[in-house]
Amino acid sequence: MKIKRLIYSAAVALLMAAPATAQTQEYTPSPENIRSRQQFQEDRFGIFIHWGIYSMYAQGEWYLQNYPIDKNEYAKAADAFYPHRFDAKAWVSAIKESGAKYICFTSRHHDSFSMWDTQESDYNIVDATPFGRDVLKELADECHRQGIALHLYYSHIDWARDEYPLGRTGTKVIGRVRTNENWPAYYQFMNNQLTELLTNYGDIRAIWFDGKWDRDEDTIPFDWQLDEQYALIHRLQPGCLIGNNHHDTPNPGEDIQIFERDLPGENSAGLSGQSVSRLPLETCQTMNGMWGYKLVDQNYKTPETLIRYLVSIAGKGANLLLNVGPQANGELPAAAIERMKAMGEWLKANGETVYGTTAGDIPAQEWGVTTRKGDRLFIHIFDHSQKELLLPLGCKVKKAFTYADKKPVKTKKTKDGILLMLNEIPQGTDYIVELITK
Image (cartoon, rainbow, N blue to C red; front, side):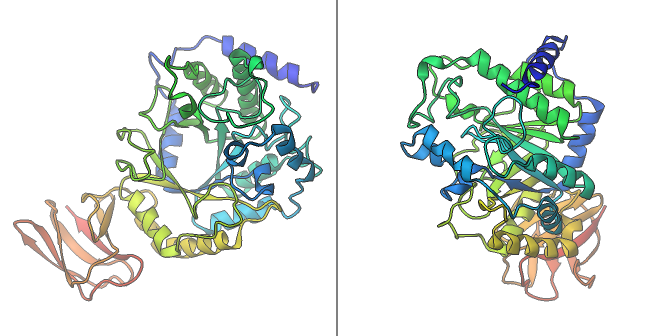
């Protein structure tokens, strides 16, 4: 046991014992939290980083769960994990160049390995690997230097740690001692780790939880004690947002609502059937097919597809959290960097129609979507084969012009809305017409 571990345990015990309004009864976000929500909503675009020792196997982040693997054999990958090409400055610079405004980094995934110098377990990147560097500290420092907000993914479940009471996943893992399951001990372990993350790494704008769905088939609903945990986080950093990828409607104490692989209100992937709340919204999506690095998965979405997806999400008033799975050597895949660069170039020219916007007046159409900023309504046309486009709008249009070159576009008010008489048939990734409305 590390010397500092007892200090953190005692500190968390005091924090958990401190008086707090039960968030299941009432939760009033602090002024700092409200400011974080506003900043988050304005950002519209973030990059998700799924990285851990699973990258050594190049089979995705669920490798330990998907096959009958002995957890102790799996853990041997840590002894060879030496990501010598990891460069926090290069990562953050590339992400900033993509136009993304924040990073969400996997601090600990379901496989139990911690990507920072935790005092709660020696199974971490500093103590268990020859690399011996705290990559989270380096990343956090660089984010703060370059003005990129940092969010931290944290798993509520653990396939390798005996104390976690297994749910419907992790049952194939060999070497688990089921008689050692101990929720109070595991809950304390999590809160100790969260205290470290929110104490030692500067401002963390959000904690992104995952794994509550692991117990959704329990006959008796499992008590995750979220309200106490959420209260702990909000006491440690009042401005820290809490999101939970539980595929359900938000719980009290949560500050953002997450949708997985779907736009808010849609459910094509089967993970986002929940209703859309009034909280700030975020959709997480993969750039290829996997979250963690998988060697054979080179089926990357095209830059055009990714740009249109970002715009479509903004048209719903939500953020895109786009995933990148770094390689074992610490590099971001070249295919991911190529697409990030293309998105960044597009956003340099058109970001004003995405950043800081709200959902547009017109719901998504076959031809595209709309976003709004004050009296400016942006018409994003993806696919349209005619020079006329009828917009089902009730507001008055004072002026209309193409966003790229500011050429006037004629409009005509009809009983069904506003008819745009375009100068040409729309071409390209996103043909944008700006309307000044009244």
